[in-house]
Every structure is written in structure tokens, then in C-alpha cells.
Image 1: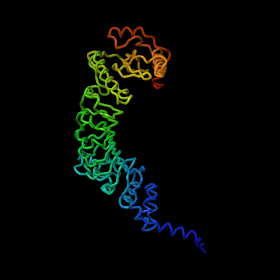
Image 2 (image 1 turned 90 degrees about the vertical axis):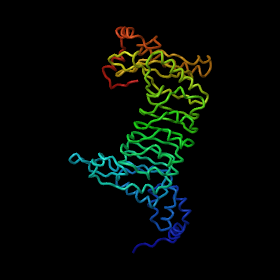
Image 3 (image 1 turned 180 degrees about the vertical axis):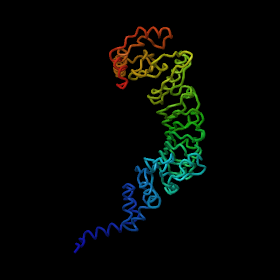
Image 4 (image 1 turned 45 degrees about the vertical axis):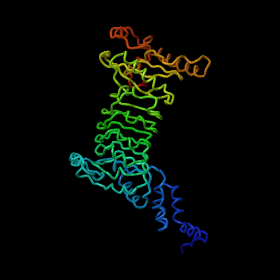
Length: 423
């Protein structure tokens, strides 16, 4: 015969079931979504408590059919989910007669016709139940098989973090971000059919802290349209060919909290901006230096930028890339230098053109400066092609240097074994 439960076990179970629903919801709020889903089955009170629970911020990713079915259950059982990632429904697609057979989300409004035809045999799954999660604060759409417009994906009034990555057929416009009045972080990468002007982000002027747009060719506008955003800390605009602007417009009153910035090459002073003349580099660096010296600027601003020398002052040679210049730092002392990009060996550095005065001897800043300077000089001694040069030489001098230069054993080993370490 089965053993009967002990009296204290019965009392504990009765007490657990009798906990008021609102108190249970608070307790469930310390658990993850999957745990809450299991616990809701105990009884109707626990089921009701689960529906009222504000599910804590926890990674939950839809990446296969099982996790998709879990999301469908959550849409009614845990409507207060706060974090959701929609990914691909399968990691492997089977190809039959050049037609893909695999699960994907149902097409939205105005889908791309060619993509819809290619996926006509795919098994489709509804995604509109996502609109039930009205408390969402984090939404990620990464490699999600979406085709067309899905208005219900852009209407979450509490959302603070939005990431859209590698969804090439998701049709949307920056103007829909107005459906996220509390948005703080916006990251969109490789969204080929995204349209709009970055000035549309002005509806989020008072909340946006981080903006990342990468490889979205149809987005246009001037980056200075975001210059008066009071909370903006990071602005990354990579490979955005229709974004324009001029860093000479960055004044002391603009971008008051900016810590990190990356601008496309077609912006004057942007990453990999093409300098037409060697003499132009000094003017560009002077602009960068004046911005960095503004009192509230983050010390690392612009220090990962490179600007390239273009025609007519550039001359071609076999194994190098165009000369580039960049900001350098030794301790607290700022300077800049030219570099020659190489394919198989470490880049060759020119001498540093210092911008800041020499730190006072005996100070802590002087010590950190001399330590960094020793590292720079040690590297110059190892790869001394441009030792003594502060800017690219004429083509005639350059050719003479190449004829006279004797690579070190270290460099020769790098030439013979390109897979070895590259500084």
C-alpha cells in the first residue's frame, strides 16, 4: 500500500496553495519564465498569479520549434514577459530542388515577392501573439525569418532596448520608433530595406542613450541632427553611405554626454575618411584635438579612428595600403602620427607629432608618459622603416627607402609565415 503523506507535509502543501495570488506573483517575480510556467500548473490560484507576475529580465530566445511553442504558451500564461528574442526557427535548412524547406514566420504586410516565392514551400508560424507582451522592455530580432511589415512588433510603450540584426526582408521605417517612447538603446545591423532619416529619432531625444546603425544603406540624414540629445553616450554609424555631416560642427554645447562615436567615411572626419593632401591632415587633427580638449569630453573619443591618404598625394606600391593617420596617447599626452598599413607584417609607424606639452618632470603623468614612450620607441626600433620621418615622404624618397631598407629577422619570418602574429 502507498504510504500516506505526513501531517506536516499536508499542512505545508495547504499553506502553499492558500498563499494569496498577489503575494505569489511577487514570489514568482524572483524566478525565470520557464520555472514560472511549470509552477502555474499547481492550481488555479497559482495559474492566476503567473499571469499577473512581472517576469524578471531574463534571456529567452525563440530559436527552434520547441522554444516557439513555449513562447505561444507564454503569450497567454505569462503576458508580463519583459525580455524576448526572436531568432531563426531552425539552424539547418534542407534544400530540395533548390527550394528551401524549413520553418519560418508567416509573411507580414507587403512582403518581398521574390523572397516569398523562394520560401513558398516553407512551413510558416504566426508571430502576432508577441503583441500580448505589453510589458516588454527588451526586444531582439536576430536572424529572424521575417518578410514584410509587422506593425505589432513596433508598439511596446515600455520598451527600453531594441536590437534588430540580420533581418534583410523586414520592412520598416525609423519613424515607427515613436512606438517606443521610453527607448534607451537602439541597435540595428544589416537591415537592407530599413528606410528613413535619422532625424526621425528626435521623438526619442530625451531618452536615447545608445544608437547603433550599421550596414543600413537606405537610412539617410546628418549625424548632427542628434547633437542636442542630452543622454546620448554612444553613437555608432558604420558603413552608412547616406549619412552626412562634418565633425567641425561638433561644438562644446553638442553631444554633452558622448563617450563613444564612430562616423562613416563620407562624413568629414569620419572613420576612414579620405584625405586628399598630406597638408590636410594637420587641419583635420587640429579639429579632432579641439573637440577632445572640450572640458566634458570622454578621454578616448576619436582615438580608434583612422584617416586615409588618397589621390593626388598617394602613390601605389605592391604590398602596402594607403598611408593613414591617427590619434595616439602616451600617458595623458596626446599626439598623432602617420602609419603605413601592411598586409603581412606589422604596420610601419612614423614619428609622433605631439599636440600636448611635455608633462612636468617628477609628476605621475610624466612617469606614465615615459613608460608609454619607451614602448613606442621600442617598436620603432624593431620596425624602423620610417624612423626620423614625421609625414609620408615623396614617392622618390619612398622608393629610395625601400631599396635601402633591410628587414629584421623578425620581419622576414613574418613574410615567410603570414599566419604568425600580426601586431
